Image (tube, rainbow, N blue to C red; front, top):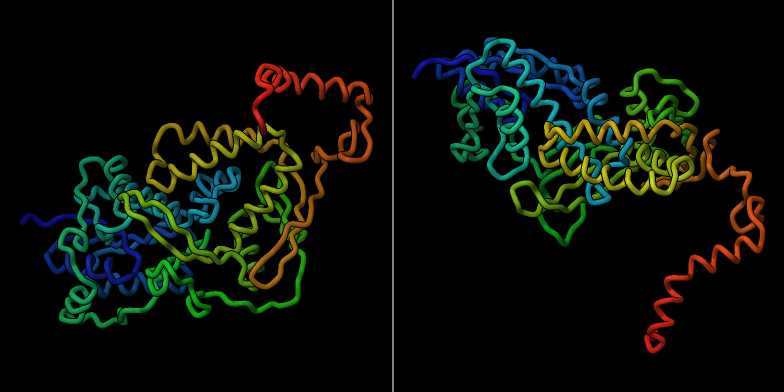
Length: 399
């Protein structure tokens, strides 16, 4: 077979390590590319580079798309208060899209014949990678050894060992995907619908017991300060909130939902920053947006999250939704106060110049200034008209 120039989407895990070595051993030019959306430490990236060359890669590159991930995805998920099933902050699924986009761009830049990834045939990631590559790198072959050959974990480990690459890929009870927008947890009790995750399944544990306030300041819907500390870099602001919230073990949950391939899926996660940010942002919007702004934002935010999760980021409607979400944030300004405690938090209040609660027309349940008592009685009478019409015609209907 002709030898190919192949880009491997390389995470450093078992499947992509096997893919690099196998394709290199078959005589191909392998370019290992790790697309970092904020989940890799500097140490992990250095180790990935070392391992890629040990596995036989001709070249290794880290593609840092963390800022792009924020500007083109996380920002809008905050604007839209996006939580899949009112639970999951869509961490892994949104990351995969931007990792795939980065890999596709790199493959085009170097004139690759093929792109390889390590997805199996039983998950959503195969769809996110394949669809993105098909659209953004047309004509480039897609190689998926793990999926196409239905390889077991043991078969991949045995191959690596037989070819002189010894690494600790022993079967662990849990598998993790760590990212800036949360850590997903698979395996173990997740596979049993009757069980939740035990304490040892989580990577972050409670280290702070005393309750404390957290103040998050927004300008036009974006975070600009955390506890009074200003941030130009929104990614660093998210990381700061994660550091604070994770010390309380905030953001733990399990999500059950419908996968793209049609089966039910369950995933555990810990996501302190997304949970705190989204609930703080949602509270601020309750004070600063009109009734119908909130209603329609909820509708489009839900669609935006669903499309993002189900590999439809490239659908042309997505930037249209983003335009609406961005426009809706023009008055979402102010500081939100949250009270943190171990394994939970509560919203306290907001301080905003755009607070619609500060109306001079009246204070709810206290005193009206924009209308008279007779105005109120007339309004109520007109409001009741369709009901009085209906029950006047149907007096026998008992509610």
